[in-house]
Image (cartoon, rainbow, N blue to C red; front, side, top):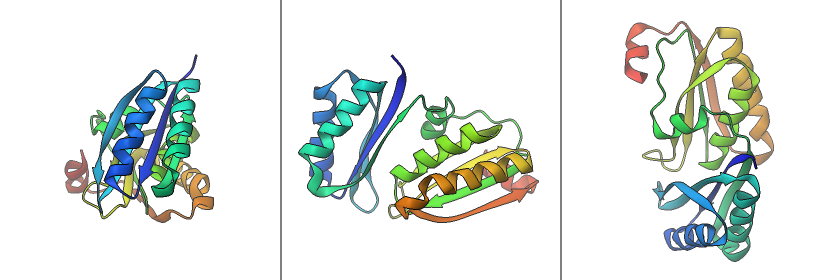
Length: 182
């Protein structure tokens, strides 16, 4: 059994809560996050073994597809995804800062997983649509070349979804910026 993470994103709160309930009733999964996000959308992120997560997400998509915005299932997600979602990543220093922003909530997690698996980088934060009118962003750090490679791979991972908004890499950000994000 391999660990997995899955997510559904809905246009309405009622569809989202109903889908989240269906997911946990479908298979042995745990809710990481289930909440309303801007602008009145609902997300549910689950974890468990790959087959359980896939079954739960597939069931939610089938039963509540009318209001579905997006979904994903990632097998063997990078271990830094979870603390970044919770805003609990422990980062000592920021050599280079990578920033990537998407139009939706689910794309940023897929992008972050790709980025973390591409180069030696640390995910600092995944801000998933809270207080951002439905947009999301990630912050990551590492050596400049690693951060650049990770951001490029992350953009490539979501380009077909049409959800990429913007990105940048700051080599050696000022101490005030480092203090603000850590």
